[in-house]
Image (cartoon, rainbow, N blue to C red; front, side):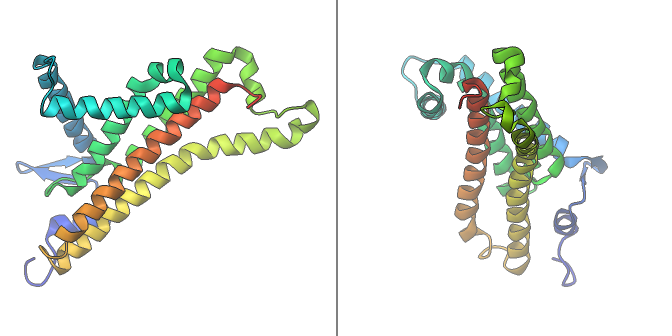
Length: 235
């Protein structure tokens, strides 16, 4: 705060400007930069864990083993034992990645990449392409029956409805994650401007819960879309 005005970084974040200054150089597309920072951090943690694996886990290894085990049990309970084990690595990686990006918004000096619509749209389009590709690989040409309904008489009604429903999925996924995380970022900035310490600390726990829930919702919907594509048109 200088001269009664918020810090330029706060103004830039509030207005959604997509650039940051690092070492005197302007870096455009800051959401991409922070995404790579998040990936580098996760790869570093994975490399450290890989080198320090022990039969009796402790500390960080214990935390991630418990997390992966909980995700695997949830996925297997929803998708079935055999199918769930096949897709647990993908879904667990997606949850951890989105959750980590969400958390970056709580670190001073960082922004959450998921507070940028470009990030969430790319992830939603990946999910859209993924579950349709899985359905096509599993059912071949019969996958079209996912969109045509239980009888030929209903095709003129069901086909447009199902197409709209499926095309709305990436829109819903991207806007839900972006809107919630972006809204939290803006609220955090406003609280910081009004009360730098007392205004931000109490809502950290609330926003941590919100960021966890948004990562879980994205993970869960992805799992349900894949499950639906594998189950076949009769479901």
